[in-house]
Length: 258
Image (cartoon, rainbow, N blue to C red):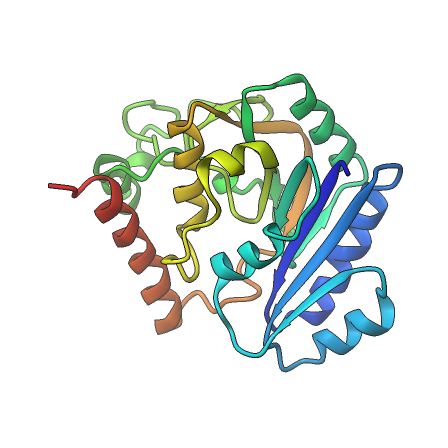
């Protein structure tokens, strides 16, 4: 099988349906499977999948077990040469699946790939390509220093600002909203680290891919629409805990060993 598509969903039924329809269109002509892992949604997501998408492999969790653990549930069952982890609040372009699979086929050392992401207004999302959140990269981002020289390799490592939006290039960190992963690479690196409940797991896995000798790519010749933040409330205390907690887990894991 060429491709396994995995979506973790939590209370975004209508967006999920939109995401599924676009993925099915884009994957036409390939041998693929789709997993939806629902983390105890209360909006009839499970019923919608069962009624409208009988061929989708549904995993209905009885509680919200987090993004990493839910993805791992499906990855362990996946049969694809490639695994696409994608958010439910996305719309995939019709040419995305053919183009990214073709690119990965020509890059044997590619462990993972992300694509150009835009929001609902057509604005480019900077997190489409990122560098490792080293203490310096994090400081320049959160202090606002990176905005002074946004294309500087020294000051804007967080968003790798020297790489043009329309330039395909090797990057350090893939965005969890769209991660195309080589199954063979995951067997070497291991799956998502389940100590990350939500946020940070994409950074951690991206870093482990590079540590294992693989390369991560930002692919600019197609795009997805990402309705950023629809499944989380950005100003909620839960979001603050999850985001900054994930950053602490990553820094502690790799940069505070001593």
